[in-house]
Length: 311
Image 1 (tube, rainbow, N blue to C red):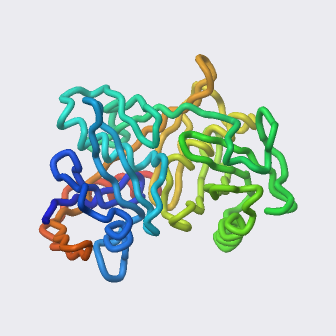
Image 2 (image 1 turned 30 degrees about the vertical axis):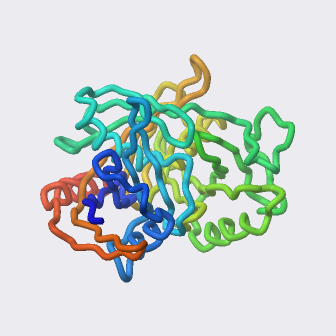
């Protein structure tokens, strides 16, 4: 069978997106497909695969990492899928599901003129079965995980997927890689793995985030990690609640607003940009692809946005 794809990105976090409402992918080995299509040397190349799906009249997202594992949630990805879903809903506010949870989606005010921008509201939990290092604790805020690192103070956040966040004076990517790899060895502390973020505070309500994503390694951007990092900084008094927090990373920037009223929740607001498009040819779970075109104006617009952020 053949089906269309769109290569897209949220804050530089690149995905191959497929409309699985339009295309029935029941016969496709999605694990094998993700491994093939995300390969940056021999295929389209991406940080993951996104599927727009529908269930009982509600639209949702499935997301697969480059290693074929399925993620519960992806903050950058769901904005891209929301852009595709909006074509079906015809409205700028609707709910979407991912990983068994429901998320409020908004076609938001542009973060840069004419750049498609969406917001997703993420409920925050401070306890999780994924936090083996914090069994029985109501929250884990600014504490050590000694078997992971003797010095860093971690805050544990779950926004549909689990994260640990630590503030540092400078981002050391080699150290971040070692932390991400160490997590895989500590099954008691991290029974399902975890996303690891290091945060540098740049100024008032302005932070820089680097993340080692489980199943993907270090990527240019991770939406749920940026959300978790902004929330962690609010919990630690380093950013303000009810204020726009500018969150930067190597891929670009988003805005987060952390709320306490009605239960802890944080809105993630950022771009959903298209890069290119093409067609996948699948036969007996072997794959090939044909690149058909590039969204040149959207690429140029995002590059303008980056220049405006970086001076």
